[in-house]
Image (cartoon, rainbow, N blue to C red; front, top):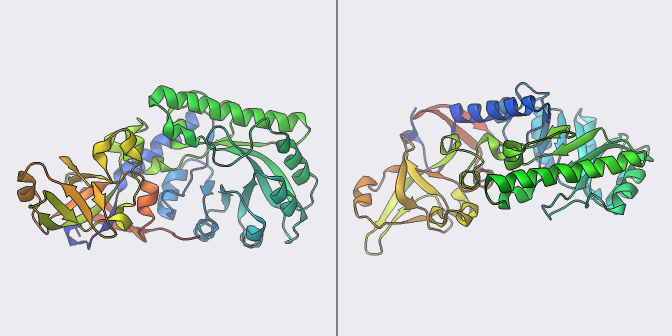
Length: 373
């Protein structure tokens, strides 16, 4: 079965590239003596998880409790749910633990810590305190007085076990070049180590010091003191990562197969059947490469770049490609297929129920994925 037999839009995953990407990250983390707990929010696939955890403990990170349930069903039981828990989700988390999940949850506030400490679901929650290392999304500052307060609330409860601290260097995505990413990786490490040392100085346990983003896992210079790293998009990479020098073009494992459905020569554009739902509206790489738009075009078979062609506008099911050279109409006749490289692999993949896995131009497998919450 080859690519041309697929209905479009379709999500295409190159098996050899994703295998190479995961092997490279595994080798890098082993060389630094750091455990790898890959974040599966990108792939949401047990088949990718097996590649990403090979040579390590099998520990994973997820972003939803639906993912946690899916991976547990596929034999992955050491799971960190890396989104702040709320009291209303504790029963769902407890049910997963009762089923055999070694589930870790996290919080960054006193109210939730008290809710965890007061809960009685017949299990003991393992809890990490989230630290803001500069991402400015969630987490306590490493020098916050609440860090120790939360630690004590959890440590004194029979319903909780304080495991340590967790941070995410998400601001590495805004860093300026490799040197900027290296600085962000140092900030990530410094913050989480400061939080860990404060807990320990207060007589509180902190066996886990968890950090990670793909850019900081790729370019960080030292992980001393960190027990585990949690990169995610490294399994596929994307245009955003490429624009930030976190990967090379040959590391891009994911693409969207689309069909040319229109030639609007009077306004100078080609239209494909991959729009906002198929590609997402993420334009993150545009910060560095405005010509990328919603995705850059490649030859469907060879993956050679189709120079100067990108998806500049999307509606729900249409992708619009500006044409400056009329030869593009002959090169891409109506009914022909192209592949679009996404800005953000995690969000693009979320629109699909499976990956069509290829070696070259041949479809060799279909890998499922989990969606929803």
